[in-house]
Amino acid sequence: MPDIAAVKAALADQRIETPSWGYGNSGTRFKVFAQEGVPRTPREKLDDAAKVHEFTGIAPTVSLHIPWDKVEDYAALGAHAKALGLELGAINSNTFQDDDYKLGSVCHPDPKVRRKAVEHLLECVDIMDATGSKSLKLWFADGTNYPGQDDIVGRQDRLAESLAAVYERLGDDQRLLLEYKFFEPAFYTTDVPDWGTSYAHCLKLGDKAQVVVDTGHHAPGTNIEFIVAFLLREKKLGAFDFNSRFYADDDLMVGSADPFQLFRILHEVAQNGGFERETNVAFMLDQCHNIEAKIPAIIRSVMNVQEATAKALLVDREALAAAQRAGDVLSANAALMDAYNTDVRPLLAEWREERGLHPDPVAAYRACGWQERIVAERVGGEQAGWGA
Ligand code: LRH
Ligand code: MN
Ligand code: MN
Image (cartoon, rainbow, N blue to C red):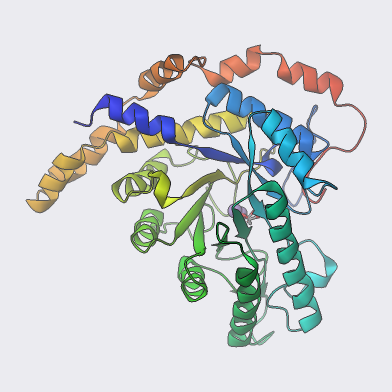
């Protein structure tokens, strides 16, 4: 059996990055249900993120999305984060909310539009320089809706050229993370639809380019843990965007729809060195809380990743390897299932108490008065949300 002290030490090393946009209003194509007390500025999003970190102890970084989090002075935003005990994490680009991008951004047939998109990406690297962020996370809404609409290979060529221009601009300690998604908003072809496409571009670009696995971006039934294992073996897994889905890119709380899948993914991470700091895999959430209270939902999500991580760390890897070598299918499978079926909540409550944290972070947040305070104080101004 794995040593509990080693499991606890590994848990203490884990960091989960929360997304600034998870704190703001979001919705479906049909309706945004505004919530009281929602942040109006990037600073207020950080104030909320600080609460998530305060009660979980493992969420010290926050991803920004540009221009949703556009500010005059990024160094000052970084200083605000620092004062709260946080750091600014990945910078996410946004080339999907501008009229010019109707037919794509970096893959657009018109060089003027491509130039505009690349300039935005370069501006994101400037922001990284100011904030100290190390990762540029790219997701492109590019694709086509109709057969014949554009040349598939031509679009790949434009993508490669645009990515190369951005890669060139990265500093030695900065990296580019390329996210894939199999459909939406384009419906016929998508220019980066799968891990293979992302991997091929990253491989050509070089060591500072890696793949992002967003758990919501696959066709139903896709074996995501296989992708994770493969990319780790190739040193090309840069980050996760965690969330849960039942149907499409639902962006529900990670671990809520299929906790067993989350466990299987994190088992491959554990098995292939992905929890080690040097491997530099970023564990990020990419979620939207449309009908549930946002801050406790993000706390819950961080806890869900932590619970699945604890179970993955509890796998008896020696017993597993022995069963695999012996071709003992049932014992090998049992090694995973025993860990998955362990109730790790008492272990995690103990782990928190050892660090001076409340054993139940959601209850502690509810009792701390922050929600009442932001509802009372954040009146007037425009609430942050998608596109704002
Ligand atoms: C695209 C995506 C990508 C975006 C985020 C808001 O579906 O997952 O990561 O940046 O949503
Ligand atoms: Mn994502
Ligand atoms: Mn998504």
